[in-house]
Length: 412
Image 1 (cartoon, rainbow, N blue to C red):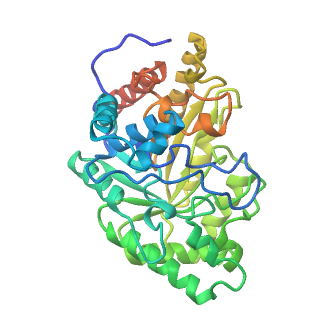
Image 2: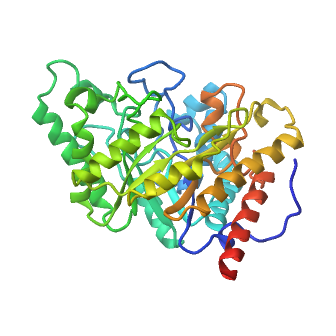
Image 3: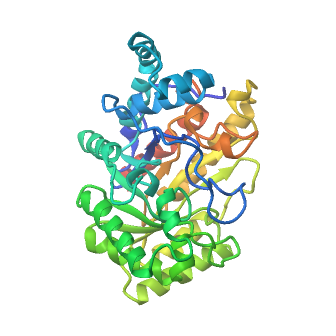
């Protein structure tokens, strides 16, 4: 599979001081959710992908994730029987026993290789507020506690987004359904409860996610912006800052790796916010890249201009997808695996060589837990671990860059 010689050194052992290497804990509901989830589905607000399966109170985060994947791939009658209580205790235990090794391996990867965690879905509006005036924090609570137990930072994701909003909230935006003040009270309550609950425990929040189009115009389809105008974004930052004054607050988007109309629009917006005293602290560059697409050679230059504004920059959702997936039962040529490793290495080098770039988060613990194949048909294998949860060539390429940067810093 294009691997280099392996040894027992983990990624976490060679992360340079002051840098955060992150990954996600998969959402226990629909694994296909996540950033860019509507890009192949036309403009505007999109429907949910199907029932969010809350984890059993007895499941830990990783059992819940492994179980959700197992059920997603199970026959429909088994899924229905599980959800409706149609399986015996013995049958349920057999399924738990089947997923236990994978759950343990997922936890092992996250603890051994990463010092930062982002909730894939557990912090999004439809998860934490599935019903009006009712919050569900079980999974996010557990995620934050897990990170604290293992000395890891947490990035919160995301407060204001056009996607993955609960039906009850979208219904409030229907004509005549709610007044502006009622909606604003919902926003104030949501941010105060979600950000405030983790005051001092979640280090960063993506306050506004994907609010600009590729041509630099404001995106339509975000219900808050459509209703209240672009000023609502700055207000969301102020509300988040009031809930946790020590938390770093980010704008976050995709297709902003290079200097282009979209990143230019964000650069101007950041300048405006800073001039107006909006509590903006960082710019998140997602880093969803296709191996068949042009690599952002000007990434470092682009990051530096945001850093020069006084902001931190992070690569927040990095994956590098290929044209075929392991689940297609097609062997990916070794040279493509090596090329993927080179591209990951280039992203890491740009991040590590840019003062003010404080972290990089991989979006997926392994290829078979990635959202990519469900949204980009015929594409996949975008992470550092394969379907068997084993390191790929990209893993070792990243480790070499991290170790090399640490050594060069020690020599200076």
